[in-house]
Image (cartoon, rainbow, N blue to C red; front, top):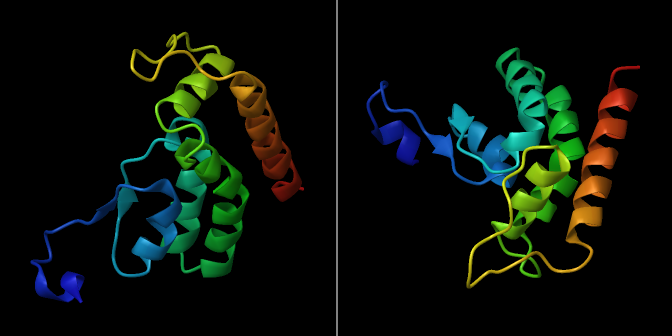
Length: 128
């Protein structure tokens, strides 16, 4: 409804990685995200498929990112803890979160590695 009441120059961006595809269905044109730091190529692919009218393909790409979305938004480890763990896993030395968040809990680095490994495996499977 809102998108029908704004000027054509108005662009809606998702602020939640996991809601990007549903928001595109009502006119969103992109995302300002967190998981996009490691799912950027997947988001680009999803946007290309969506813009080409391949909604099934866009949904499939979105599905392979769901674990990343859950990882970066969980109540157990609120952001920025998971995103910093992922960046550190990817070799981008961003350090730990400052107080009051403090250092990451035990096992978060391993979980980041698993989430990214699963994403890479899903990418490889999709390209076959």
